[in-house]
Amino acid sequence: MRTVCNRILLFLAGLVLIGGGLAVAARGRGWYPDLLRTADKPFITASQAERLTDHGWWWWVAFGVPGLILVLALWWLLAQVGRRPVRSVRVHDTSDHAGDGPSGLGTGFGMVGDEADTLTVSGNALADAIEDDLAYVSGVEHVTAHLVRRRHGPTLRVLVRAEPGAEPRELLGAVRDRVLPNAREAVGLEALPTVLTLRTSRGLPKRHLD
Amino acid sequence: MSLEASPEAPADGSTVPAAADDWGDGAKVRRAWSTRGLPAALVALLVAGIAGTALYIGVTARIDRAPRWSRDLLERAQTHVWRDGWTIAAGAIAAAVGLWLIVLALTPGRRSLLRLRSPGGAMTVYMTRRTAASFLRHTALASSGVLDARVRMGRRKAVLRVDYHFRDPDDLHDELIERLEERANALTLARVPRVDLRLQPVSGR
Image (tube, rainbow over all chains, first blue to last red; front, side, top):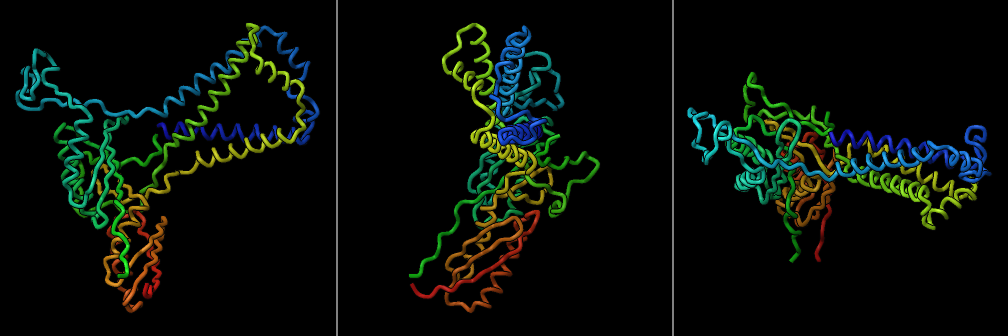
């Protein structure tokens, strides 16, 4: 979503800059005088300034348009810094005793109703657990994992630093068959979309002639 | 819709889970699309700055407390004519920046990421070019007689410059090509890179 919005807005900004820039340059050169007016006038002529200050509505435009643009631009700017982590994942009790109040999940300290059968797991804790699990996959040197919030639920983002001799097929197979099912089962998620990026350390040094 | 490569939809119970070796084929995968967060932030900051300045000038002029610089600016705008080298230069620069923004908006970016075939299970996997190069270099260095290998990894082709000694070059070439192509296949890249091998003998110190 953010990708699409950013690209549309960048495209529009690019169009405005191209159109405006070319028009300014053309008027500076004196091209198309009937379309762009003559190049031998100042940017704001005295009559224009007079006309503007004569009208009462001019001040509303002078405040309103830049104000509106300012607010929208700040909104766009702030949308870029959001990290959107998953704060918590709710785990429901699906055992036979679900609904009986305090459940085996360790909740129920005075809680009643729905809350008593629900446990919340912090997103960081889950990501850390996945990291630890991944670190034992053969060929993996170092892992960083984050859970980010997406429209379809939590998404896992993983950065794996692999050994230069690792077999990607085996590594990814282990992640798919062991690590991710473990994580999904632990918190009862039906799907956990994962974006994984492989990196390596520097690898073997050059051999010397000696 | 997100332009970002979306992971394959999880099997909705009707399809059996994919067999262990049944990985997605390379034909369908798309490139990674960048969010373009930095250009967007810069443009937003610039627009906010200009709009804020205009608002400030408007408000201070309305209450007759316009600072000197804003009065100077308006004065200049009323005396400066369009026909000027700086005006033309500014317009040309703005048009060039605009063109660049359009290029940024329409291209995927993230050129360093190579997409891998999806192992299934709603996984999307990438590998940096440097990583693929490192894997191939590691394989090249495992052959005897190889002293060093420098890899330039492209999207379609990997160029390896290999320094060797005490080997028959044809023999080494055949061995390396076979191993490197096997390794390139084993990386499960969506587009298997061609291996371009260049051997360079190293004699003595």
